[in-house]
Length: 223
Image (cartoon, rainbow, N blue to C red; front, side, top):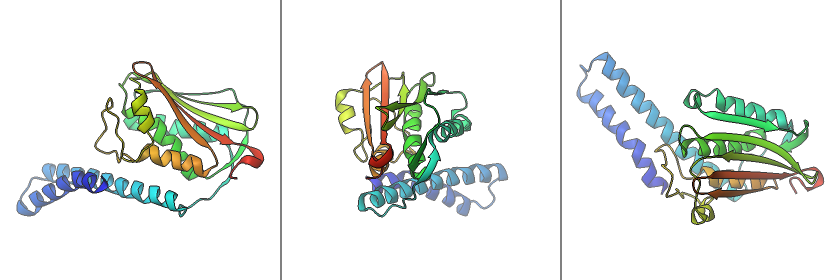
């Protein structure tokens, strides 16, 4: 799958590079356009390679894992703000809600950020532009913290939900962007499991989707 996906960005990289070599007199405006396309597809290639590397690092226990204590509510809120400020999602309806008082939790900030971001961006890119995406935090039985990513988008069938965290799976009722590796949700699940937690999904066609990340607190965490 990854070999097939790598051919997608490599084709325009090769094609536009050949144009530049074969037509050295190309106007500067076209040179800049070709260069931008090449750079975009190089970024796509790098993402595919990094996703593949990370998923197998997580599988083999070789992923860099540096847990430290963070102020969790503030951490999630800042993560959401970063996505809101991304020009790619400037006009999207992204909300953060939390009735949880600030609490300290031990996580790997970089890896956990990757997991939550993957869920949020998945909800944004696979739904109509007017979809509302809400990220919320709650405590469950005082020994687990839950992060929910909910949307009121197109939803998924039960069959799709059962395959959602499989590598390279692409849903039948979503329009996968070419930049996707098909590894994002599988990586999110691997990261959450690494933290001693779990991830689940509930969805219904035409009503939306809810992802839930559950992380243990106290002595259960990172067991």
